Length: 122
Image (cartoon, rainbow, N blue to C red; front, side, top):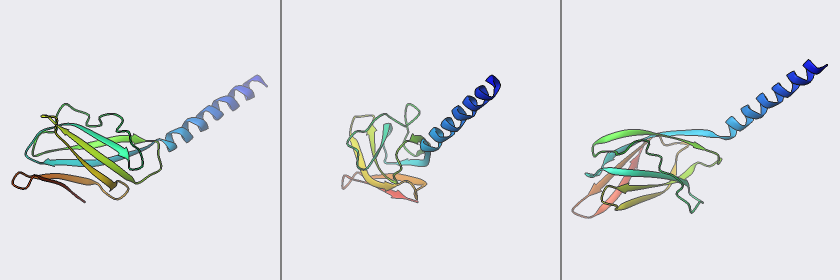
């Protein structure tokens, strides 16, 4: 009888772990830096959230003309995310409501003549 209780407890823990893993979904997308400047930090936050949380870059710098895969775990069941980048000179740029359920690539651009920063998505 004790073996049955131990097996039942182990199965219960396994099911709980699987349910937790399911609720902690992973998002992946590629960021391409075409701004002319190196990026030091990248933050991703649900659009309805006012907190940038932690840097998700995963390395020291995203140099100009390079790309990286951003892989982050989300506990929220949302598609719209805001993104903020911090350049090495501490300037920042932000993009609102990126649909990461549909987007797999975000290319960041900057026009020095106009001072305009924008993102194109695919």
